[in-house]
Image (cartoon, rainbow over all chains, first blue to last red; front, side):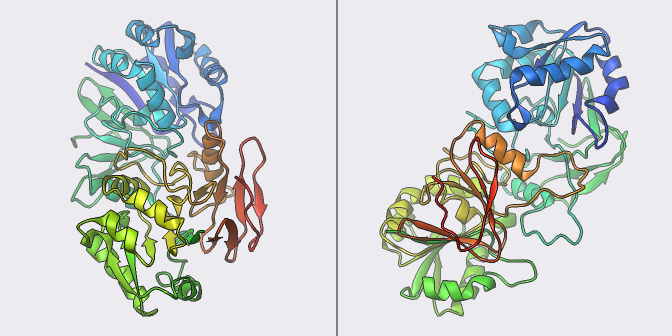
Length: 234
Length: 234
């Protein structure tokens, strides 16, 4: 029993924070009056307090109280009692290191199997995969492991970017990076474009939002999966 | 006593492999008849053999024989006797993991202090810094540490990219990522644009090539350093 929304990004270009997901989130958290926010990924290095205030501001519109996990003495225990959890984006290395150090990862994994509603955006979506190894982030800190929640039987690449036609930059494209990943890992990867999300209900993983997703499987040519399709790779 | 060329990229747009550095490399390796190539970073997942053949093809023009480090039973010992070393680009996580597992990192660090000529491109340049923590690469494997050669007293971001004006993509810019790095690390970072390189002679680090570099210091606004300037941050 799982119940997750895994979004590529918190914000679409020109929009306000989480605004494009508002109807879905009202439904997703309809039985929750208070949820826990995990601000560990600290985008741009902002503080846990400021980041939590941002989430609070959005969820006030849905009459849902948001408490930052950093406010609890025992974060793992807080997760074990939460009505819902939202993990925001930022740096995935930082997020995963904190999740391990605060012993939150295990507690969170257990709750995901108890049907607790979960929302992830960007790094918070990345950690729902089997490992964080298809993140786009810089390794600014050294986490004790790259293994993550495994709430879906594949990996996710959030903010998926198509190769820029006519680019003169010689750095690797996203597709090349994921191809390198597949030389050492057999796990499928879902390239999730900004504005799209994966809806997880029990064991059904459905792509939602305006875009198709790009699916990468080891030893196969990548292909497009239309929106509202069930993701069957594993 | 150090003698290094640390290039942002092996290839500039529209050019052939290493071609833009040919006069510098002829001078740099003038006393070497045979150098060792480290192909561990395997760009796009290509084999050690194929990657080494690419390096061999270029250095044949300079009458220098290239031997891949994977051909030696004892890679660390091979490094300890090398006339010169070239580390190619690809995936930095993969490169660093192999350098540790093959015990090459320590041997290579020792030789850099003995004035042995070294060439790095992209990932091979990244590892000359204090840590690999400002790489752009995907964490496709888990290295035992992010610590690298420390042949320069700062970190390097190869393939440095300026923010794309008018971009609608919501992923972090390179500058934002380095800013996040500086929330947890005090080390300066040199953003090295494609076509530029750092020339290391003894303890003097000089920026070379057509572009300025972008210098990031913790708690300071980033700034441009003109080419042919000495890099004095540490």
